[in-house]
Every structure is written in structure tokens, then in C-alpha cells.
Length: 128
Image (cartoon, rainbow, N blue to C red):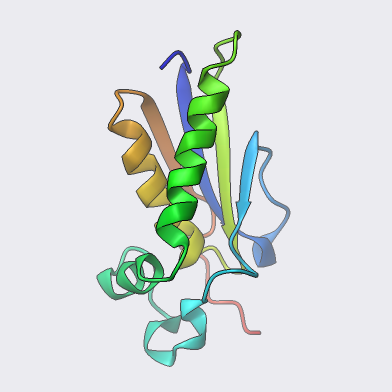
């Protein structure tokens, strides 16, 4: 890959505006929210039950694959440059963080330098 680095940032829309990015994945409307399960609500993507719930959601693996392919397409362009991918959900603690982790892991397998940041993972659960 000719991209210098890829920055993957997870975030929650309820904690503020999305970070500036070349690609933004909005997981809010199309993918089941673990927040609705009281057993998962206070957990985060750092916890295996949350990661299992998110990764078991229909379409999520295909979304990660598509995002990785988009990153490859940017890389195929004539001007190598850093790339930022933002992954958002409502609170940034479950879906976005899990998908960002999986995407960063996948992109890193190609030898690309990947920096993963969880903007809102440690913030309190948002009452909604």
C-alpha cells in the first residue's frame, strides 16, 4: 500500500460532531445497538460479550470488508497520503468501537501503519 498511515477513529454522535475524515461509517440506523440489552449497556467494546454481539450482527462483517476495500481504493489513487476513517454509532461504546477495532486489525494485516483511536469509548453511557 502507498498510504503512509491510516487513522481509524471510533466515536459517538451523541458526544459531539463526527471527527473530520475521508470516509465516515454511520452505524446508527442499520445495525442492532447492544445498548438496548441491559446486560450489555454498561459494557464497552473492550468486553468480549459486546464484541460478539456486534460481530454477530447481520451485515457488519460485510461492512468491514467494504470499508477495507474503500481504503484500498483510496490507496490506488495517484497521490499517496494519510487516510482517516471514522466509525460512528450513537454513543461510541459498542458498535463503532468494535467495528473500528476489526477494521484496524484487518488493515494492519497488509503492513500498513494503522492508528486506532476511540474518542468516546470511556465516556459515560448516554441516557436515551
